[in-house]
Image 1 (spheres, rainbow, N blue to C red):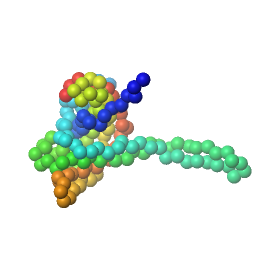
Image 2 (tube, one colour; image 1 turned 45 degrees about the horizontal axis):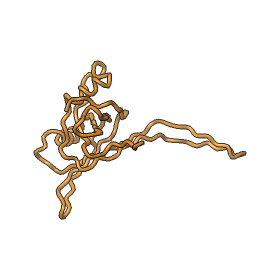
Image 3 (cartoon, rainbow, N blue to C red; image 1 turned 120 degrees about the vertical axis):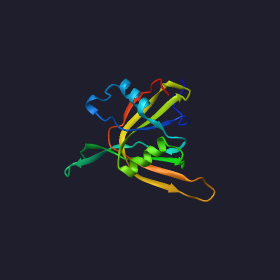
Image 4 (tube, rainbow, N blue to C red; image 1 turned 180 degrees about the vertical axis):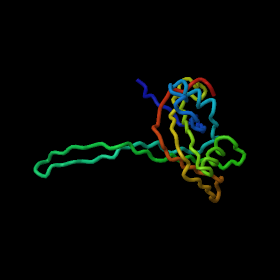
Length: 167
């Protein structure tokens, strides 16, 4: 049996404003896919994307009079998501949306779309979450292109849904 994997090549990064009316906004996976495809902007040529970490605090309790112990799990902690891009002042879509979110302290909806085969958008997965842009950095190094890195603080559950058929 072959080991199934999804290559990072072909991963799409979509940025959009969160739904304005959450109670009446998307609820089903199909509605979320439509919302993301209808309202998002693609980030042009991301160089790297960070991890989507979720962890739980743990506390271990041990007994003084024996070797017995047990653990308790706390709430879920979410880290941040770094996106490194070639600086492109003409990318008025995704990259500029992230920069504007930083300047205006506006929330964003981030959707990371993985496809088994980039030409086949019906066979992929979308991980989406709400976030706030906490930093932007412009990196200038000798013999390299100018890059910008945006840090998004994950501020909601990271939800996985099947990708749709729109591009």
